[in-house]
Image (cartoon, rainbow, N blue to C red; front, top):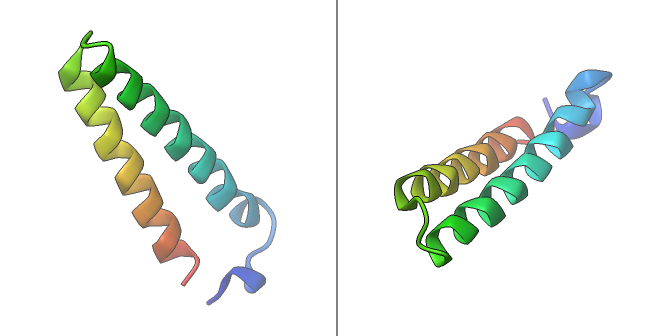
Length: 60
């Protein structure tokens, strides 16, 4: 199955996941740079990487 065969909400899910991944990466980076809550920052960066990995799997 490729991205062209997706329909409905399945076609929108990768785009929403990528927006969420960018938001998590920016938020996690902000927390790390400002030295506020480094553990939450690292977890947000890990979550962003997992979301990007999921999108790569979905679009194969």
